[in-house]
Length: 146
Image (cartoon, rainbow, N blue to C red; front, side, top):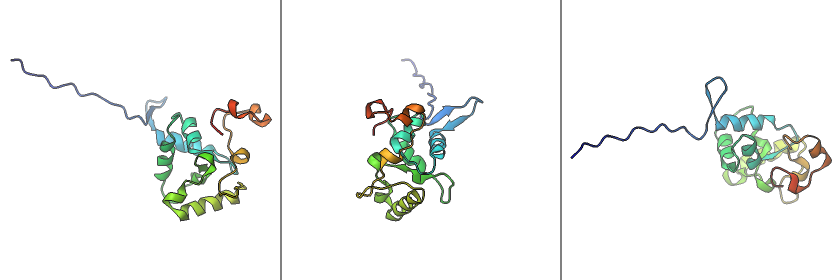
């Protein structure tokens, strides 16, 4: 009977670690927060859009987790990220947080519908789209769902 050797330890990279050009790593949260910082005043982006722009398509919860992990008093404009369809997702977690988010967005000129959702047709941030966005692309041509 031969002695069994232990299996070699597998080195697994965490999914959220992304190599940087200088040899370091940058977490997916850092990528998400970098995208959120680029959203201009008076514009909003959805969690799915932020995740896709951060390089993590099909992972909108990642954007939510990154924003939830922010410390109080941060300078990241977290209030500019909304749920699909323009919903204020904070309403379930914190009604006070949702009120703060709505107030901040209204102060920036973001319009809400009668149902309390953001008018995405008017206020969505169209990152990465140049002149085609200004001409008004159809829903089929947009890189994210309307």
